[in-house]
Structures are given as C-alpha cells and as structure tokens.
Amino acid sequence: MTVSTAAPALVPGAVVLDETVPARAPWSAVVRRGQVLTIVDLHGNQAVDCLLYRADDTAERYSAPDTLAAQGGIFLTTGSVLRSSEGRALMTVVADEVGRHDTVGGACSRESNTLRYGHHTAHQHACVENFLTEGARWGLGKRDLVSNINWYMNVPVDPDGSLGIVDGISAPGLRVALRAELDVLVLVSNCPQVNNPCNGFDPTPVRLVVTAP
Image 1 (spheres, rainbow, N blue to C red):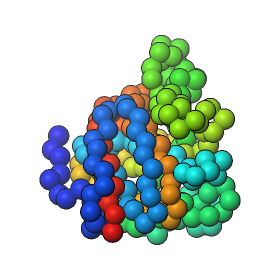
Image 2: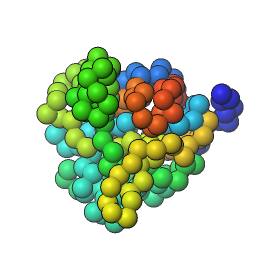
Image 3: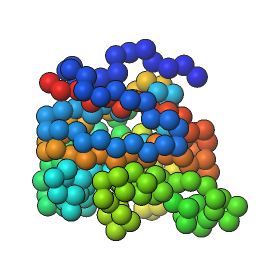
Image 4: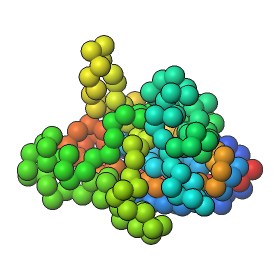
C-alpha cells in the first residue's frame, strides 16, 4: 500500500505534536482551545474510534445525542459541531477529505466480539480495552465511557433502519481536522478489529498532528 506524502496538517499552523499511532494501539492528548487536531488515515480504510472530554472537568464529555440532534443527522463531516453533555461545543470539524464519518456503530469490545463472531475471539484486544487503558492515565474508568465517534468508519443505514459495517470510503493519506473550542482531552483507539471490514481486516497505523494557528 502507498502512503500519501502530502503535508499532514489540513489547517496551516505551527506543529505542536506529530505522532504516529501504531496499529491496534491507544493514544491520548489534551488539545488546547483554538488548536487543530488532524487525523491522517495513512494506509486507508482504518477506523479510528474517538472520545472527547472537557480537559478541566471530564464529567463533561462528548454526547452523541446532543451532537446529532443539533445537526439533524447521524454522519459527521465539515461543519459538524461535536457537542458535550452540557450542550457546549467541544470540537468542530473544520476540514474533511473523506465526506462522512460514523457516530452510531459504537466501539468493539471483547464481549461484543464474542457475541458477534464467536467465542474464539474472546482473547482479542478491542477498542473498549484501549479506551480503558488510555483513560486510566487521566483518572477515567469504565463508567466514563460513552457512545464514541468512529472516524473513517463506514456504517450505512438501510431504509428499514438496520446498520451495516462495510468497507471504508477512505483512502491512503486522507485527513479530517478538528478544531478545539475548549481545552479538550482526546482519547483514541486505533481500532484493532479484524472480524469485520471496518479496517479491511488489516489494522494499520494512523498519524495525529496538532497545530496551533
């Protein structure tokens, strides 16, 4: 697979942080107000699960119901405002080269893998475990996990309301950029799922770049 050599940041600015997250691994950082986080799908077709918390009060966190109700739709793209449990804007999608990102597919776990794919998957690491491992660094536990965002994941909704996890619509090097409207703690699970097409059955690294205007 080829990797794009384009400049990683979608929004010009001074680079504050530039890290590659290995396949299947977690990541976290505080993105300060006004800074922009660019997520780069290095190899294409890699789901990036994401949770957001207000950095100075993690009891306020990303709320899927508030976000979807305010924008009147379930997919995220340029202009989408990611709202908190208090209705405040946490981050705004300011640029998007993919066009659509999932909010309803949830995060995989050992329990859901076992239920969906069989008991032979019970040993497999999953996004919930990544969130718990990384969240513990910030004093967060299982009760702090809420419905998450799945950047790049393709979850179409059929006319009868059923959901499907299918091949992604991303490609190598495509990016999405999020501007922090408050100081925001970002938790990421670079999804380790190998039992459905969300990662093309082959998890790969992603790049995370924070820039300041």
